Amino acid sequence: MSGYVWILPAALLTFIFLYCCVCFGAVGSLSSHRNSGDEAPFSFAGRCGRPEWYDWIWAAAIAACYSLVAFWGLGNAYGPQTFFSAETGPCVISMDEDRAVSRIMYYSEVGTGQYTLEASEDLDLWSFVCTIDQGYVQVLKWHELKLEEPVTARYFRLRTNDSARMGEMAFYDADGSLCRTAGSCPLDDEQWTVPEAEDYLNSAYFDEIYHARTAIEFRDSLPVYEVSHPPLGKILILQGMKLFGENPFGWRFTGTLFGVLMLIPFYMLIKCLTGSSFISVCGSAIFALDFMHFVQTRISTIDVYAVFFIIPAYLFFFIWMTREKSSETGARIWALFLSGLAFGLGAASKWTVIYAGAGLAVFFMLDLILRRKDVPRERAFAHYAVTILCGAGFFVVLPAAIYLASYIPFASCSGLGSGIRLFASGDFYKLVWKNQKFMFTYHSDLVAEHPYSSSWWQWLVDARPILYWLKYYDDGTKSSFGAWVSPLVCWAGLGALAAMVFSIIKRKQPRSVFVVVGFLSQFAPWLLISRLTFAYHYFPAVVFLVLAVSCTFREMDEWRPRSGMITAAVFTALQGGLFVLFYPVLSGTAVSRDFCGSYLTWLPGWPFY
Image (cartoon, rainbow, N blue to C red; front, side, top):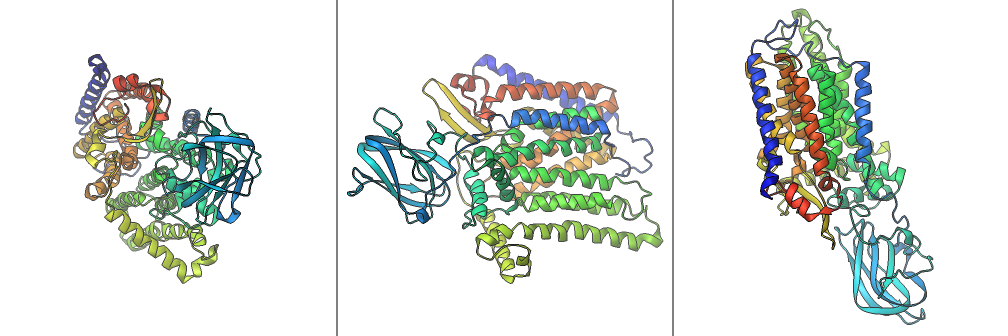
């Protein structure tokens, strides 16, 4: 990085340092502060800021504005829709005349195996051209095959006896011109979908080759390859393909939509924690423009669904915890139910949501302890019995039912049938249990290496993003993008978390407890995990980093009126500026390598040059 370019990170670090100083100053000066009407030294009762009608307008407006950015350049909304396989039999591609073919572009769909390509001038005598391997990492992608020597022929035939499926095949002569074909078989009937080269807009990248593939296998009742995560996330991915077809836009649509929609409950959670609409607007915008949120919700993997369901699980649990002291048994039980519902849907998408469940369990026990003096002795048994039974029903029985139901498509692909009747089948439960054992063994015993893996301590300081896409061009430009947290959120968020801990010690502030426990529930388990990890595993914890930042804005306002609002506005503007600056390496936009090396590589581990 050029010397003068250090002005950017240096200025940001200066702002973060001043921000953290003000955070601690605000908390320290309010050590004896209590919310009006609060008699107990520590209580969640009555501490929920009430969203007003205009909050829904603000939340929807933020989501709508962000959607314009999120869906732009998401991926091609077209691609091959007819496929060659062993079931269709050998496929013959006919050209208008003999052509000297030197290069082939083809699209591999799902399945693995080997193809045999042959050539002929008269459909009688066939000569071997090459074999094409389709491994498990080659699916849902366009490939370029350059022949060692040009092959002159009018007809080409593709055969396979394996499970591999191919979508389209295009032939180019020595001059690079596309050869015209008759369009009479599944391999040449959609030539208009053939791109000049593979890129992220027309092909799958990173774990899309597993998760989008599984969605297709669910759709077509094929044997399922990726069984290391629960099925619901892949079922949701499939819904986008049902709407927009089997193409990159289709398999990324649902995740991006969930990335947009999660901003609404996130806004409401900030409003409940802080009571400020302005801070909620700023906090939601900060989260929307966070690098991790933007990139991770635009890739067709399952992490977005985990985070999406974690947010309402905590939102509704906070609403339940903050019911008034005088509330009857069963008050706001609807919120507890919705929290359990969100938890169940999340757990059926990815196991990391179970970490969130540990945090909710802590709050459930804390609520029972804090309200022990609020319940008359004559009603104590009934109160605790109802509360504990509802907790067990909403957070154990209901999630278990959702989890089992998510396995219905998986059971169908395994030949066990489909529908609700599977719940009466012993083989269904054996299948589910076998998969649970496999998932646990897989994740606990995984031994692998990856050039862009990272450890938990690197997440805390933004030391090692995960690079998803990188391609160099002859004109000196490059296209790349990866997932990591905005340095403003990452570094300032740690200071805000520290201020939250200080607030717990000095002020016994319930909202600080809520944020800190939520963060630890998503981050602390990774301290004990030795398997290969990546920066995107930090995504659920980023939710609580932004909540911590938002709550410190509120602390500032309570310390000195409007100081928090001013800081929030400046913080949001800086986050927007960083998003614009780093947009090329968040979206894959082609820019010069010099620009990336000079302005976007702040730390040695940032792989954007």
